[in-house]
Amino acid sequence: MKTKTKKPTVQPYGNVAVDSGQLLIIDPCYMEEFMKQYSYDDICAIEGNMQFRRGHDGIALKLGGFGGDGMFDVDSVTFYNKYSPPYSKFILNLYE
Image 1 (tube, rainbow, N blue to C red):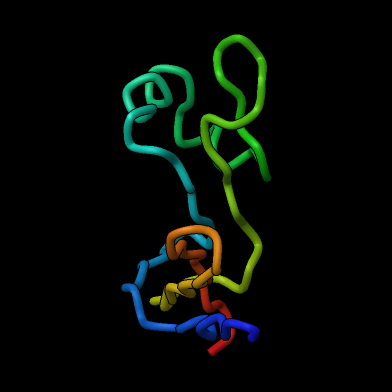
Image 2: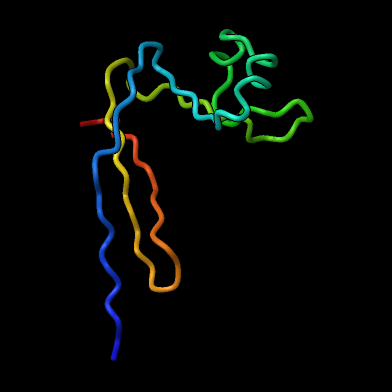
């Protein structure tokens, strides 16, 4: 007998305000190091991965050029796997 896996669920998670036409994704534990390394002008000049002091990617990710300013919804998509606990992915809704 085959066990059914529960379908993913989509739920509103929150929203984010954008006034500069760009977003920065960063783990808060890296904020202090990041702020010592990058100025606002540096952030504006970079697209994509931003580097740690030692030169490898991943301290932050800058998203820009996605359509300007506004309030953007973020949804949580929770997946239920037969062999692992539920986990979520997040979707930034830019075009609603």
